[in-house]
Length: 308
Image (cartoon, rainbow, N blue to C red; front, side, top):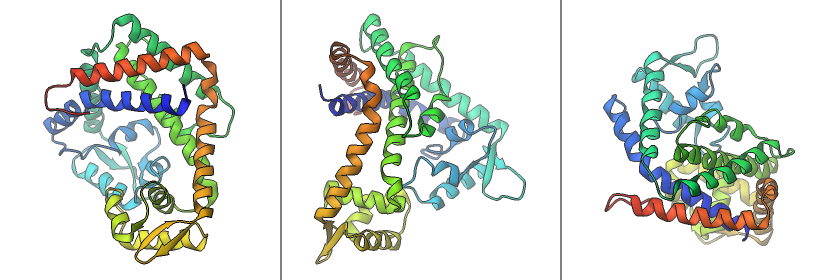
């Protein structure tokens, strides 16, 4: 099987698993006074970065497409909620978790683990086999030569629940680890191009969905927190490089731009899939079968009316 198809199956399995525990985490967060969605993207990271403070700059190291101001707003909200406190010292915008913040994280983690521990989408022997294959991929990724660097992967590994955790909890960890390593590979592929994060995401959006007008692009990427003017400047940045061209109100990739974007995608794949040679052909086929079955089992176990 094509490894790209195999990763898609793994990513879909991760999403299917998140559909089970995500609502439980949101409910638990609201139960301790955190408004719906206000914890996502920074609260868990704050513990990962310890003993160093959390800041917009640190958060953006992996989430390079999100506006720093969006992170600043979230961190300020964390202070208002009593989850964070200023780190002190001369550098502003850095925070440490409060005792309440630590308790909140423990509550959210325990809630997620409890939700996953009740899931049995496959027989135990099959789940353990899937666990073993995914863990081999994670170990191979950690041991792979650089580039890419492994900052995202090593950060993700900080939440490893250990071998005594329920098998579904371990599966969630290993799938999340691989997702983080995909980010490592992706960042390594495009950041040497020397463009901003918002320019690269605009470039990728045009590659996948173009041609698009500035308004259409801004609408697709509104969740990132950048202004329309920021994306206008990003498009100018791409046009100067000869990667995109304007046709009326719409922007689309040039031949040079398409070649550049596809080369970056190929580099991402080369970095990311290199460690997957630790599996032979029969193990790869076995992994594919298990991922399909666990994804389908998780989808079938969702409450009626709730989609992944």
